[in-house]
Length: 282
Image 1 (cartoon, helix red, strand yellow):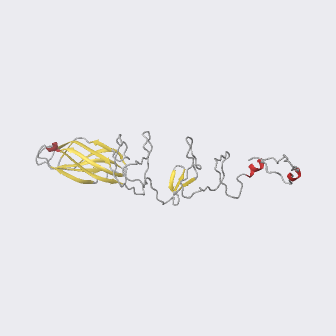
Image 2 (cartoon, one colour; image 1 turned 180 degrees about the vertical axis):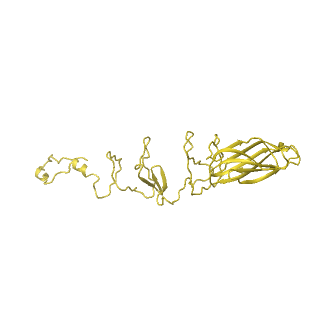
């Protein structure tokens, strides 16, 4: 803002009387006008770009149009746009963001959340933790909740599961060749601890190709529970007498020892290539 001096010139026939320009109040100087700027009680509209180097302090901001789009910092080309601190909640529509957590703003404990819920068609991949250098754990759900899969799983890993907590982990233990007879024989093998979960247990053996010989194979665990016995009476060289038995078992406690329970109809029946394979299914 600027100040304008009082007139000093005289016109022909009109004499300048300075007493008319004497005031008992202080004139509105530029300094005074600057201190009063934006302290008005009526709405003000600025058509030019306004710059506030000291920042803006306000409890509420409203756009002039309640239906048109609102752009914040559309010309920003560098730097970080920060809203609040890591310990404070920021509400965007119905989403609450606080630190690294995202929750329903109105019902954090039980409110629904949707990621990509409006996507249709085959495009628009949703990626979570896909950086090739990532080695940390990605956790979905907890022990007390159900995790529903509406589509199909397509594994893309190039490294096979290596620990017994991973689905698809497989461990093979070879058992010693043995000779069994008409009495039950348990051929055991010791495994590292198998944690609770759903496991596929498979037992394998090669039987002699002797007509009339029947061998009953059963998987046996450390608790002495025999399950799903199978019989084989090879009369020819089909599969070279190689047979297997398998079952799916859900463990609620860890297991350590497994074996094959074998019994033959003929004494001194030699069994070779014995092995037990365990695979984690869930």
